[in-house]
Length: 401
Ligand code: FEO
Image (cartoon, rainbow, N blue to C red):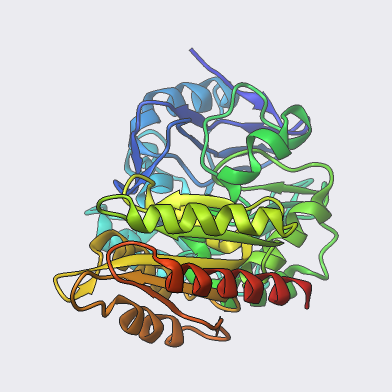
């Protein structure tokens, strides 16, 4: 049975939800599931904007069959060739053998890498600014490589000003029928999932996102239709501003996120004291995370939000405690920049974590490390407590800059 919604009189959402998948990309927890969006434009010619993940193929095919009402698909536009959006190309070709597949040269390469379909007679290769006329709707293609894969492109529909934006402007989370941004409680229920999705999936490619934002800035965009999450038809400037901040590695908030690893509670205790002192000094909205029991995708999300971070880790096997090392490695991999960092380590006989953390932080761009760097021997004592208060003062002074 079909489960669709109208975007306009001639454009139908034919996507679906997966609330069973535990890990997106078999990596990121998605307790609220995920949405796979696909859009059907019913004009003189019929165009389908991407497909969906194999987990919801049955629902997707029901949606398409109902919406087509006996018509065929003329064009499948592949904005993104990651399998969560193109698992149904083969099935569509079986059902609609004359359907043309539109992508750029890299898209076609990836189709051939992933699948064993004979698609030569179906392929139409497009490049920057190429145009496809459907009748009342004109589609223009914009190449936006590495947002999130090299073949990614976006498609702009002129009549309604709709940007089909591929992964950009998407989010984790299955929708609850509330397909449009103005139908849901965005700030309270969705902003965190948007930030976690952006920072972990696309965060590495800030430069490419900035290039794409500049390229698209001349378009009169009235609606954004991403491949995941809600469709935006109001307050677009809010979302565009968030993307500008995230992709330029600009902190959203002047506040502190404290991340600790602690084997027996002594490092944790030092961080709790520091957090209390920071709040006493007037800092607001600080957050504290135990990296051992918080998924790294949440830690990354908070690093993208906060201007100041504190890293507190024991030395372990002569190295950085593994969960913290993994977090720092993710920061490096995602190209994190432009943060102010406080450091604390702990070691009972040979504390070396701080030295190695400094090296990892210094490998990132525009990172400032505050003084003093605090090193605890087993547990906080009067001398290290005094250093911790000095670090608090340095953080507060830096926040006031
Ligand atoms: Fe939702 Fe990059 O795929």
